[in-house]
Image 1 (cartoon, rainbow, N blue to C red):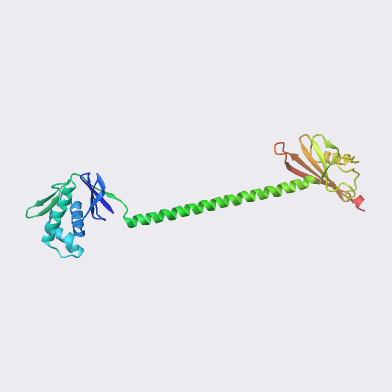
Image 2: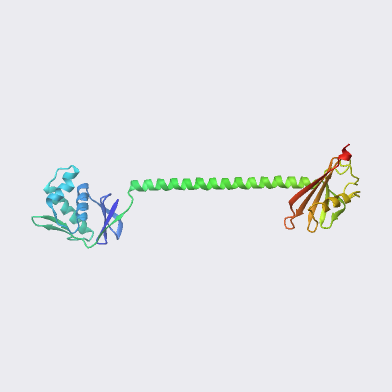
Length: 263
């Protein structure tokens, strides 16, 4: 839809076929279809003389209507009167033996959506908003799933870590330099070691020290030693302790077999 602003004060809407003064936009003056086509043609040829024959062809015959000179003069008179009522006098002049000319100081066109276009734009905006809301909900759901997955992993990790710590039995004296020593699993019978539960005397800490000396382990920094022994083998895990998170890191193990005890 095109709105033409004539002399910076009157608007002609070529789709609605209405004239409006900019000081009173709520009051609109309607033009008949032929009058609207005629004014549009004159605006498009603003400042140019147009013959009566050209007008009759473009406004009536080309649109499938029978051309009539009487109709032409009738609609020229109507348009002049309506424009005069809106403060625009004598902008359409008669050119004797030629035709007419529209002379306006300023004419500019402003493209605005028609009612149908407005409905389509509103519908498109609604769809865009719906799609945006859908993707926002989808993103929120995805973030929620990631959060739940992270929480589940943390719970499993904590469960495993707590389960491991729950079966650790401290040895006496319980330390070699900065290493805390723990027996893993059931400390009596199945491992064949002498220990009074939870802090009794362990009879062979020398075995641990011997294995440490023959390995790359050291107890110069905080670490945990997890000791597992049965009739077949001795297994030692050496894990560094992260002093910030208190978690175990860089765990390494060594194994010593006891074939003589298995016989």
